[in-house]
Structures are given as C-alpha cells and as structure tokens.
Length: 312
Image 1 (cartoon, helix red, strand yellow):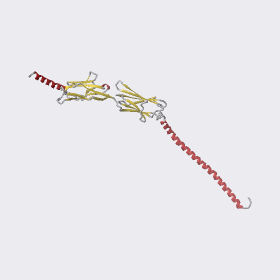
Image 2 (tube, rainbow, N blue to C red):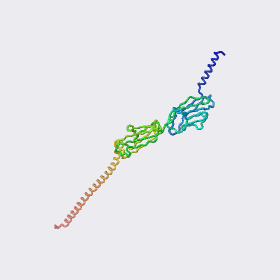
Image 3 (tube, rainbow, N blue to C red):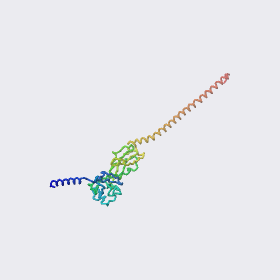
Image 4 (cartoon, rainbow, N blue to C red):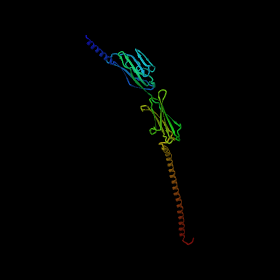
C-alpha cells in the first residue's frame, strides 16, 4: 500500500470518527419556565432522551444546582444520592434506569425563585449543562381597612387605610365606592418588601367630610391584574352623604318631611270639615225660631177674627 492510499484511508477514519463524536446520543430536555406557589410543592421538570441507537441506557450521574451557588441541591452518582433538606427526585422510587430526573422542592419559599442547572451523564454519553427556571408566586391575604378617625361622624375629613400582606410579585390595591366607581386620584399606594421576601401593600384614601359615600371597597390585584380578594367598609348612615353634596342627606330629609306633609294635610282637612259642619249647625238654629214665631203670630190673628165682636 503506497503512501497515497494510507493517507486516504486515514482521512476516511478521521471523518467517520468526527461524525460519530459530533452526534449526540443523550439529551436533557427541561421545561424552560416553571411556576411555583409559595408554601406549596414545586417541580423543575426535566427528562433524559436518547437516540434510537441507544439500548437500555443507564444514568451514572445527576447534578442539580441553583445558579450562583456551588453547593449541590441533589447529587446522584453510581447508585448513591445526596440531597439538601427540602429537595428530592420528583419520583420517590427513582432509580438509574428512570429517565425522569425532575427536581421536587417540597416547601417553596422566595429563596427558591431563580435559575437552576442540571447535568446528566449516562453509560451512553452525556449532554451539556441544561438551564431551567422557577418563578415563585404568592397569593395576597384578605385586605383589612381601618379609618382615621375610628368613629366616622361626617363632621370631619376621613382617611381610610387598606393593607394586604404575603403576596409576590408586587400587586396593587384599588378603591371603589358603592357605585363601583374607582377612586385613583384620591388614593396613594405603597409597596414594602418584607424579610420573608414577600410584599406588604398599603393604600390611603382621603375623603372630604361633604363627599362620603355609604360604603367603600378595597380590592387587591396580583401582578397579572387578577383579582385576589377584597374587603368592604360600611359607613354609618348619619355620616354618609351620597353624591358629594348631600344627596343622601336630602333623601333622609325627604323621608322625614313626606310623612309630616301627609299628617299636616289630614289635620287641615279635619279642621275644614269641622268648620263647615259648625257653620251649617249655626244656620239651622237661626231658621227654626223664626218659623215658630210666625206660626204663633198667625194663630193669634185667626183667633181674633173668629170672635168678630169688635172687642179685645
């Protein structure tokens, strides 16, 4: 075999080896975005897929880490598994023949929010480090409302304060009156990040003494503008003046005046009836004596005429 033939054969083996090495027999596929609920279990979903040529693959190593940390959350190597508290394989009966390598977080907190890396090695090859993420959300608690002053009389300006805690990401508090009209111009909201990584929301609603409605509702919305919960404060009727100018006060006055007008009308009617009856009685008494006097005088005349003797 001459040098040219040897060179061609060597080049052929190099090409074949390069093609073989470039082909990936093992691949780790992870869900790119996972969502976890605060205080609940969360899962980072990942599986190992192999090429058709691979028969009965066996996993040698699995390494789970949180990006930015050198510590392993879960480490499996040749039959032995080491995990930090709060982490484990999603399938409790997992073994090295199981291609589902998903990571389960048993109690999700804000610390678990972020990116994770997963590295897998098998007896048929391995894949590059795969990145996936977990977005943690927390539901806001039912809001509460307090007022300054505590007792609302309607004779002074009032400030309503609404608060809701325990949510993530940052949400929003919104005010509505009894007509479901929002009051954004009169309210001011603040968001505070607490030590546990959750938000505390508070909003102040300023009310003028002549523009107080009968009830106000504070609604908490999450970061996706979804309504989570609400609370309603009822204002005493004596302090509320509907319609920013006393429309409700006018209604209350009308409720009082209307019965008074009706009763007054009845009294006036009775007095008129009594007056008419009295006048009719007086007229009757004046006519009866006159008629009797005429009758008596007529009788005397007739008696005098029957005598006819010219004497009295």
